[in-house]
Length: 313
Ligand SMILES: NC(=O)c1ccc[n+]([C@@H]2O[C@H](COP(=O)([O-])OP(=O)(O)OC[C@H]3O[C@@H](n4cnc5c(N)ncnc54)[C@H](OP(=O)(O)O)[C@@H]3O)[C@@H](O)[C@H]2O)c1
Image (cartoon, rainbow, N blue to C red; front, side):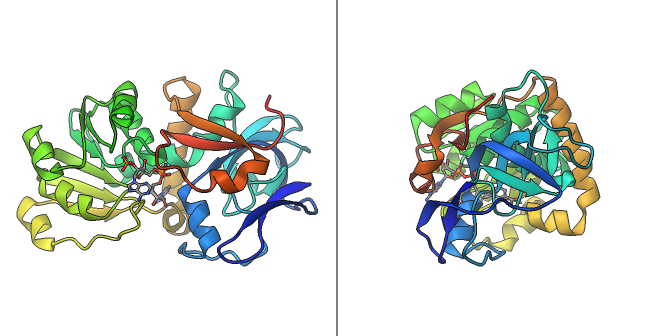
Protein backbone atom coordinates (compact mmCIF):
# COMPACT_ATOMS: atom_id res chain seq x y z
CA UNK A 1 0.00 0.00 0.00
CA UNK A 2 1.01 3.66 -0.32
CA UNK A 3 1.83 5.52 2.86
CA UNK A 4 3.58 8.69 3.97
CA UNK A 5 6.85 7.79 5.68
CA UNK A 6 9.12 9.58 8.09
CA UNK A 7 12.47 7.80 7.79
CA UNK A 8 14.46 10.02 10.15
CA UNK A 9 13.69 12.36 13.06
CA UNK A 10 12.66 15.69 11.54
CA UNK A 11 11.67 14.21 8.19
CA UNK A 12 11.34 14.66 5.27
CA UNK A 13 8.01 12.88 4.87
CA UNK A 14 7.71 11.04 1.56
CA UNK A 15 5.13 8.68 0.05
CA UNK A 16 6.37 5.10 -0.35
CA UNK A 17 5.10 1.56 -0.90
CA UNK A 18 5.05 -0.42 2.37
CA UNK A 19 3.36 -3.65 3.54
CA UNK A 20 -0.19 -3.40 4.87
CA UNK A 21 -0.47 -3.06 8.65
CA UNK A 22 -1.77 -5.84 10.89
CA UNK A 23 -4.22 -5.14 13.73
CA UNK A 24 -7.73 -5.71 15.12
CA UNK A 25 -9.83 -3.84 12.54
CA UNK A 26 -8.41 -2.97 9.09
CA UNK A 27 -9.77 0.30 7.69
CA UNK A 28 -9.28 1.73 4.20
CA UNK A 29 -8.53 5.39 4.83
CA UNK A 30 -10.35 7.91 2.65
CA UNK A 31 -9.43 11.09 4.50
CA UNK A 32 -6.88 11.85 7.23
CA UNK A 33 -6.69 15.10 9.19
CA UNK A 34 -3.40 16.91 9.72
CA UNK A 35 -2.94 17.75 13.40
CA UNK A 36 -0.38 19.91 15.17
CA UNK A 37 0.79 16.88 17.15
CA UNK A 38 1.71 15.03 13.90
CA UNK A 39 4.29 17.70 13.17
CA UNK A 40 5.72 17.49 16.70
CA UNK A 41 5.94 13.68 16.42
CA UNK A 42 7.87 14.01 13.13
CA UNK A 43 10.20 16.59 14.71
CA UNK A 44 10.74 14.27 17.68
CA UNK A 45 9.54 16.98 20.10
CA UNK A 46 6.18 15.44 21.09
CA UNK A 47 5.83 14.09 24.64
CA UNK A 48 5.67 10.56 23.20
CA UNK A 49 8.32 9.46 20.67
CA UNK A 50 7.83 7.48 17.46
CA UNK A 51 10.93 5.65 16.23
CA UNK A 52 11.61 6.16 12.49
CA UNK A 53 10.76 4.73 10.08
CA UNK A 54 7.07 5.31 10.76
CA UNK A 55 3.90 6.51 9.05
CA UNK A 56 2.68 9.76 10.62
CA UNK A 57 -1.00 10.70 10.96
CA UNK A 58 -3.29 10.42 13.96
CA UNK A 59 -6.84 10.93 12.69
CA UNK A 60 -8.72 9.25 9.85
CA UNK A 61 -12.08 8.34 8.35
CA UNK A 62 -12.80 5.59 5.83
CA UNK A 63 -14.42 2.17 5.48
CA UNK A 64 -13.86 -1.12 7.28
CA UNK A 65 -11.87 -3.33 4.90
CA UNK A 66 -12.72 -6.67 6.54
CA UNK A 67 -15.31 -7.62 9.19
CA UNK A 68 -13.81 -7.79 12.67
CA UNK A 69 -14.73 -7.15 16.32
CA UNK A 70 -18.33 -6.20 15.57
CA UNK A 71 -17.54 -3.97 12.59
CA UNK A 72 -18.75 -5.09 9.15
CA UNK A 73 -16.94 -4.80 5.84
CA UNK A 74 -17.83 -1.51 4.17
CA UNK A 75 -19.04 0.27 7.33
CA UNK A 76 -17.98 3.91 7.41
CA UNK A 77 -15.90 4.73 10.48
CA UNK A 78 -13.65 7.41 11.92
CA UNK A 79 -10.98 7.08 14.55
CA UNK A 80 -7.63 8.07 15.93
CA UNK A 81 -4.24 6.45 16.43
CA UNK A 82 -0.87 7.69 17.65
CA UNK A 83 0.74 7.25 14.19
CA UNK A 84 -0.19 5.47 10.95
CA UNK A 85 -3.15 7.39 9.49
CA UNK A 86 -1.44 8.94 6.43
CA UNK A 87 -1.73 5.64 4.57
CA UNK A 88 -4.14 3.73 2.37
CA UNK A 89 -4.92 1.44 5.30
CA UNK A 90 -4.74 1.50 9.09
CA UNK A 91 -5.37 -1.46 11.41
CA UNK A 92 -6.55 -0.31 14.83
CA UNK A 93 -8.18 -1.57 18.04
CA UNK A 94 -11.97 -1.63 17.78
CA UNK A 95 -12.13 0.74 20.77
CA UNK A 96 -10.46 3.44 18.62
CA UNK A 97 -13.25 3.36 16.03
CA UNK A 98 -16.64 5.09 15.81
CA UNK A 99 -19.34 4.61 13.19
CA UNK A 100 -20.06 7.62 10.96
CA UNK A 101 -23.74 8.62 11.19
CA UNK A 102 -25.59 8.05 7.88
CA UNK A 103 -26.20 11.70 7.06
CA UNK A 104 -22.60 12.78 7.62
CA UNK A 105 -20.04 12.75 4.77
CA UNK A 106 -16.84 10.78 5.41
CA UNK A 107 -14.78 13.90 4.81
CA UNK A 108 -16.52 15.77 7.62
CA UNK A 109 -16.05 12.87 10.03
CA UNK A 110 -12.29 13.03 9.41
CA UNK A 111 -12.31 16.62 10.68
CA UNK A 112 -14.34 15.89 13.80
CA UNK A 113 -12.63 13.32 16.02
CA UNK A 114 -9.63 14.96 17.69
CA UNK A 115 -10.27 18.72 17.76
CA UNK A 116 -13.87 18.51 18.90
CA UNK A 117 -13.14 15.89 21.53
CA UNK A 118 -10.27 18.02 22.87
CA UNK A 119 -12.47 21.11 23.01
CA UNK A 120 -15.44 19.25 24.49
CA UNK A 121 -13.39 17.64 27.24
CA UNK A 122 -11.73 20.95 28.05
CA UNK A 123 -15.12 22.64 28.34
CA UNK A 124 -17.20 19.92 30.03
CA UNK A 125 -14.88 17.57 31.85
CA UNK A 126 -12.25 20.08 32.96
CA UNK A 127 -13.91 23.52 33.12
CA UNK A 128 -17.36 22.21 34.06
CA UNK A 129 -19.00 24.83 31.81
CA UNK A 130 -22.40 26.06 32.97
CA UNK A 131 -25.01 27.70 30.75
CA UNK A 132 -24.66 31.48 30.52
CA UNK A 133 -20.96 31.53 31.43
CA UNK A 134 -18.56 33.57 29.37
CA UNK A 135 -15.90 31.54 27.54
CA UNK A 136 -12.85 33.10 25.88
CA UNK A 137 -11.13 30.94 23.25
CA UNK A 138 -7.59 31.75 22.07
CA UNK A 139 -6.46 30.59 18.61
CA UNK A 140 -10.19 30.49 17.99
CA UNK A 141 -10.05 29.77 14.24
CA UNK A 142 -7.65 26.82 14.55
CA UNK A 143 -8.75 23.19 14.73
CA UNK A 144 -9.24 23.05 18.50
CA UNK A 145 -10.21 26.72 18.79
CA UNK A 146 -13.03 26.66 16.24
CA UNK A 147 -14.35 23.45 17.78
CA UNK A 148 -14.32 25.14 21.21
CA UNK A 149 -16.21 28.15 19.84
CA UNK A 150 -18.85 25.94 18.24
CA UNK A 151 -19.27 23.64 21.25
CA UNK A 152 -19.25 26.36 23.91
CA UNK A 153 -22.00 28.21 22.02
CA UNK A 154 -23.92 24.94 21.66
CA UNK A 155 -23.64 24.38 25.43
CA UNK A 156 -25.19 27.79 26.10
CA UNK A 157 -22.10 29.88 26.80
CA UNK A 158 -21.42 33.43 25.69
CA UNK A 159 -18.33 33.00 23.53
CA UNK A 160 -15.49 35.47 22.95
CA UNK A 161 -13.20 34.36 20.12
CA UNK A 162 -9.63 35.63 19.98
CA UNK A 163 -7.93 35.32 16.58
CA UNK A 164 -5.27 37.09 14.54
CA UNK A 165 -7.10 38.21 11.38
CA UNK A 166 -10.45 39.68 10.32
CA UNK A 167 -11.10 36.63 8.16
CA UNK A 168 -10.54 34.30 11.10
CA UNK A 169 -12.70 36.37 13.42
CA UNK A 170 -15.53 36.36 10.84
CA UNK A 171 -15.32 32.55 10.70
CA UNK A 172 -15.58 32.45 14.49
CA UNK A 173 -18.78 34.51 14.42
CA UNK A 174 -20.16 32.06 11.86
CA UNK A 175 -19.28 29.20 14.21
CA UNK A 176 -21.24 30.80 17.06
CA UNK A 177 -18.98 33.43 18.70
CA UNK A 178 -20.89 36.35 20.24
CA UNK A 179 -17.86 38.60 20.45
CA UNK A 180 -14.44 38.67 18.75
CA UNK A 181 -11.10 40.19 19.74
CA UNK A 182 -7.59 40.51 18.27
CA UNK A 183 -4.58 39.59 20.45
CA UNK A 184 -3.42 43.19 20.66
CA UNK A 185 -4.01 44.57 24.16
CA UNK A 186 -5.89 41.37 24.97
CA UNK A 187 -6.14 41.95 28.72
CA UNK A 188 -7.93 45.26 28.25
CA UNK A 189 -10.02 44.08 25.31
CA UNK A 190 -11.24 41.03 27.17
CA UNK A 191 -11.80 42.83 30.46
CA UNK A 192 -13.68 45.73 28.79
CA UNK A 193 -15.92 43.30 26.93
CA UNK A 194 -16.93 41.54 30.17
CA UNK A 195 -14.04 39.23 31.11
CA UNK A 196 -14.23 35.43 31.06
CA UNK A 197 -15.34 32.65 33.40
CA UNK A 198 -13.45 30.12 31.30
CA UNK A 199 -10.41 30.48 29.05
CA UNK A 200 -9.59 27.73 26.54
CA UNK A 201 -5.95 28.18 25.52
CA UNK A 202 -4.38 26.10 22.73
CA UNK A 203 -1.83 28.86 21.95
CA UNK A 204 0.33 29.70 24.99
CA UNK A 205 3.01 32.40 24.76
CA UNK A 206 2.34 35.89 26.18
CA UNK A 207 -1.40 35.69 25.42
CA UNK A 208 -2.02 33.22 28.23
CA UNK A 209 -1.15 35.69 30.97
CA UNK A 210 -3.12 38.47 29.26
CA UNK A 211 -6.20 36.27 29.21
CA UNK A 212 -5.67 35.11 32.80
CA UNK A 213 -5.50 38.74 33.93
CA UNK A 214 -8.93 39.40 32.40
CA UNK A 215 -10.67 36.48 34.08
CA UNK A 216 -13.62 36.80 36.41
CA UNK A 217 -13.67 35.64 40.04
CA UNK A 218 -13.83 31.84 40.30
CA UNK A 219 -12.82 31.26 36.68
CA UNK A 220 -11.26 28.16 35.14
CA UNK A 221 -8.27 28.50 32.83
CA UNK A 222 -7.68 25.42 30.67
CA UNK A 223 -4.44 25.02 28.75
CA UNK A 224 -4.63 22.51 25.88
CA UNK A 225 -1.56 23.33 23.81
CA UNK A 226 1.21 25.68 22.74
CA UNK A 227 0.66 26.49 19.06
CA UNK A 228 2.77 29.64 19.50
CA UNK A 229 5.73 27.41 20.36
CA UNK A 230 6.15 29.10 23.75
CA UNK A 231 5.24 27.55 27.11
CA UNK A 232 4.16 30.49 29.30
CA UNK A 233 5.16 30.93 32.95
CA UNK A 234 2.16 32.33 34.79
CA UNK A 235 2.27 34.38 38.03
CA UNK A 236 0.36 32.23 40.55
CA UNK A 237 -0.74 35.27 42.56
CA UNK A 238 -3.27 35.95 39.78
CA UNK A 239 -4.88 32.57 40.39
CA UNK A 240 -4.92 33.20 44.14
CA UNK A 241 -6.34 36.72 43.99
CA UNK A 242 -9.05 35.84 41.46
CA UNK A 243 -9.99 32.45 42.87
CA UNK A 244 -9.12 31.05 39.45
CA UNK A 245 -8.11 27.44 38.94
CA UNK A 246 -5.55 26.59 36.26
CA UNK A 247 -5.95 23.24 34.55
CA UNK A 248 -4.34 21.32 31.72
CA UNK A 249 -6.02 18.85 29.43
CA UNK A 250 -4.06 16.28 27.46
CA UNK A 251 -5.83 13.45 25.68
CA UNK A 252 -3.00 10.99 26.04
CA UNK A 253 -2.78 11.49 29.80
CA UNK A 254 -6.53 11.09 30.28
CA UNK A 255 -6.61 8.02 28.04
CA UNK A 256 -3.95 6.43 30.26
CA UNK A 257 -5.34 7.51 33.65
CA UNK A 258 -9.12 7.95 33.37
CA UNK A 259 -10.30 6.44 30.09
CA UNK A 260 -13.80 5.70 31.46
CA UNK A 261 -14.73 9.36 31.66
CA UNK A 262 -13.44 9.97 28.13
CA UNK A 263 -15.71 7.19 26.90
CA UNK A 264 -18.71 8.98 28.44
CA UNK A 265 -17.87 12.39 26.95
CA UNK A 266 -17.11 10.75 23.57
CA UNK A 267 -20.59 9.23 23.55
CA UNK A 268 -22.17 12.63 24.39
CA UNK A 269 -20.19 14.30 21.63
CA UNK A 270 -20.91 11.60 19.05
CA UNK A 271 -24.61 11.97 19.89
CA UNK A 272 -24.51 15.69 19.09
CA UNK A 273 -22.62 14.93 15.86
CA UNK A 274 -25.20 12.34 14.83
CA UNK A 275 -27.98 14.85 15.59
CA UNK A 276 -26.42 17.25 13.07
CA UNK A 277 -25.55 19.87 15.71
CA UNK A 278 -21.81 19.95 14.99
CA UNK A 279 -20.29 21.15 11.71
CA UNK A 280 -16.50 20.75 11.58
CA UNK A 281 -15.01 23.20 9.10
CA UNK A 282 -12.65 21.82 6.45
CA UNK A 283 -10.20 24.46 5.26
CA UNK A 284 -8.47 22.45 2.52
CA UNK A 285 -8.15 18.91 1.17
CA UNK A 286 -4.81 17.86 -0.33
CA UNK A 287 -3.87 14.59 -2.04
CA UNK A 288 -1.66 12.20 -0.05
CA UNK A 289 1.21 13.03 -2.41
CA UNK A 290 1.17 16.61 -1.04
CA UNK A 291 1.61 15.42 2.55
CA UNK A 292 4.87 17.36 3.05
CA UNK A 293 3.16 20.61 2.07
CA UNK A 294 0.13 19.88 4.25
CA UNK A 295 2.45 19.33 7.21
CA UNK A 296 3.81 22.88 6.96
CA UNK A 297 0.67 23.90 8.93
CA UNK A 298 -0.33 27.10 7.20
CA UNK A 299 -1.28 29.47 10.03
CA UNK A 300 -3.91 31.01 7.75
CA UNK A 301 -5.91 27.77 7.90
CA UNK A 302 -9.39 28.12 9.37
CA UNK A 303 -10.53 24.79 10.80
CA UNK A 304 -9.03 21.51 9.61
CA UNK A 305 -6.65 20.57 6.80
CA UNK A 306 -7.23 17.07 5.38
CA UNK A 307 -5.38 14.62 3.17
CA UNK A 308 -7.44 12.66 0.67
CA UNK A 309 -5.92 9.20 0.64
CA UNK A 310 -8.30 7.37 -1.68
CA UNK A 311 -11.44 8.18 -3.61
CA UNK A 312 -13.99 9.58 -1.15
CA UNK A 313 -17.41 7.99 -0.68
N1 LIG B 1 -4.17 18.61 24.77
C1 LIG B 1 -4.61 17.86 23.80
O1 LIG B 1 -5.08 16.74 24.00
C2 LIG B 1 -4.52 18.42 22.42
C3 LIG B 1 -5.30 17.90 21.37
C4 LIG B 1 -5.24 18.53 20.11
C5 LIG B 1 -4.37 19.59 19.93
N2 LIG B 1 -3.60 20.03 20.97
C6 LIG B 1 -2.67 21.16 20.83
O2 LIG B 1 -3.42 22.34 20.67
C7 LIG B 1 -2.65 23.28 19.91
C8 LIG B 1 -3.50 23.77 18.75
O3 LIG B 1 -3.84 22.68 17.92
P1 LIG B 1 -4.78 22.94 16.66
O4 LIG B 1 -5.06 21.63 16.07
O5 LIG B 1 -5.91 23.84 17.00
O6 LIG B 1 -3.76 23.74 15.72
P2 LIG B 1 -4.09 24.69 14.49
O7 LIG B 1 -5.33 24.24 13.81
O8 LIG B 1 -2.85 24.80 13.72
O9 LIG B 1 -4.45 26.08 15.18
C9 LIG B 1 -3.54 26.72 16.02
C10 LIG B 1 -3.90 28.19 16.14
O10 LIG B 1 -2.93 28.77 17.00
C11 LIG B 1 -2.68 30.10 16.62
N3 LIG B 1 -1.24 30.39 16.62
C12 LIG B 1 -0.61 31.30 17.40
N4 LIG B 1 0.67 31.32 17.16
C13 LIG B 1 0.91 30.42 16.20
C14 LIG B 1 2.08 30.01 15.52
N5 LIG B 1 3.27 30.53 15.81
N6 LIG B 1 1.94 29.06 14.57
C15 LIG B 1 0.75 28.52 14.30
N7 LIG B 1 -0.41 28.87 14.91
C16 LIG B 1 -0.31 29.82 15.85
C17 LIG B 1 -3.30 30.29 15.25
O11 LIG B 1 -4.37 31.22 15.40
P3 LIG B 1 -4.10 32.79 15.31
O12 LIG B 1 -3.48 33.05 13.97
O13 LIG B 1 -5.43 33.36 15.48
O14 LIG B 1 -3.16 33.09 16.44
C18 LIG B 1 -3.85 28.94 14.83
O15 LIG B 1 -5.13 29.05 14.24
C19 LIG B 1 -1.38 22.54 19.48
O16 LIG B 1 -0.35 22.89 20.38
C20 LIG B 1 -1.76 21.08 19.63
O17 LIG B 1 -0.63 20.26 19.86
C21 LIG B 1 -3.67 19.47 22.19
